Length: 441
Image (cartoon, helix red, strand yellow):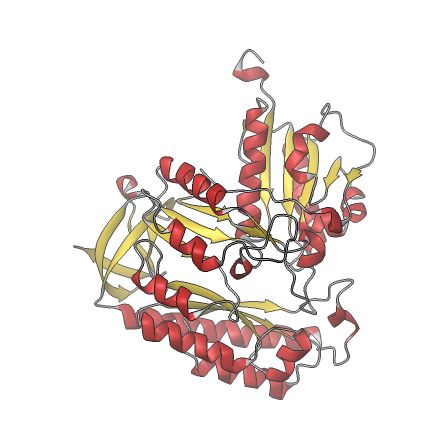
């Protein structure tokens, strides 16, 4: 390839979680190594790669919309699908009009090897392994997509939650080595990125060997301590960690660490012990209460986010209200509310007590309302305090946004010089849109 005009262009669209973003970024770098030029998804490209998710509702409908969008920009473009949905339902995605290639969990990182030429296929080709063959680990991290980087430290899950397809889509729990994670963290630091978010499927389970060796070589605490020593990284954030794996020692270390911030995202899923048992979660309500109390005792200003599912089979009005009141009384800062949706090949799909969609929607709305109240109360509690803000890179209607170390969202009139910089501020008031204003110190 002699000139930039001749370089083939590739664009990416990522659905789902932070882990998917880190993997898209890694796959993108493999294209760049092969001489491709990466462009935005809205721009004309020779190849569009869609990284799919099996957790989002209406995953197939969403996927079809994205394919149509790509073909509208270039109707001769080569369309490839990778990710969790591609592993779970490859034939379904391959049958979508315009899709040329579908790659499973093992094959997605070798995507450039599956593309001989960019001639569109009459039907989508599938290369997908049995999930039991995912006995390898590919380290990933995202750079250049946003102010913070997502660093993958673990993949797969050995838990058997009755609503979840992730173990079928990503395989057994396995981890990167500490050395490799530290090298990747160093590479991120050298790019001038100020914040790293640790990501994986079940990161508290960190340490299981690469080939599904159940013995933990290292623990998540070992990893956290090692990362805290990496020079140049101002902030480290733990993305999401199971309550039964969030040990006292981790909380204590974060409270005293150089770089780890006082922000935890801890999945709850239900505030009813009866539903937690049906979900086959590995804890009951009291464990969750203990974790929240321990965090707040060590770091009173800590932000705590919660995942919760509404409308799980057997969730009566009484059991839902149990969850609602439980969360209402708990000192948490915001909720991520998921409406339960049936997934093939899960235990929950066969359970009795199906909750009507209209009831699921109503419960979801109630919890979203509770989340807004919780967030507002947490923001109120932070007014008058001094915090460090890391500013994002986007001009949003004349404002630049940023986040404090304890995840309070702030804004100030747009100033490009603030992008990706840290500043000490005093939080002063909550604006009508729920975002906090501040004074520079």
